[in-house]
Length: 152
Image (cartoon, rainbow, N blue to C red):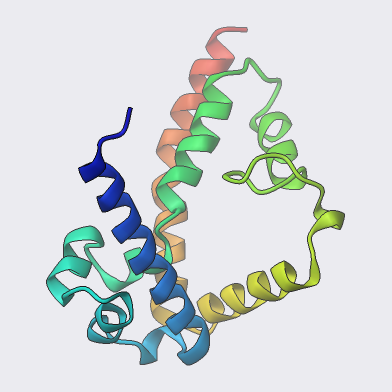
């Protein structure tokens, strides 16, 4: 059971992330400061930094969970290939939200996804960070895939 303190910390972290995302989408990542994020989330800048080490971590806060889900999927199977495991996860729905049908996503969600992707693509800082994130995923995914192949 999750205690009150842990639940409050999770709520604060999510509030900071949500408010930052809205600011990034409205004003562009490069134009938003940590002070603006803190004010929008009604916390101090120090609190923002304590939860998220850098401004980029606010934008990519779901990436560790996505990486872990991909690694777990590879580790839990003995696939003929990594593509055989990962492709359905990507095509059948968002990794963190569980299975869904892409054709069932409403217009508002598509628009939010488009705005988020546009925000990322228009920022050199975020483009660079995305490349570093994907590079950092290579080893854990390769290790999980190799372990799975070893079980065949």
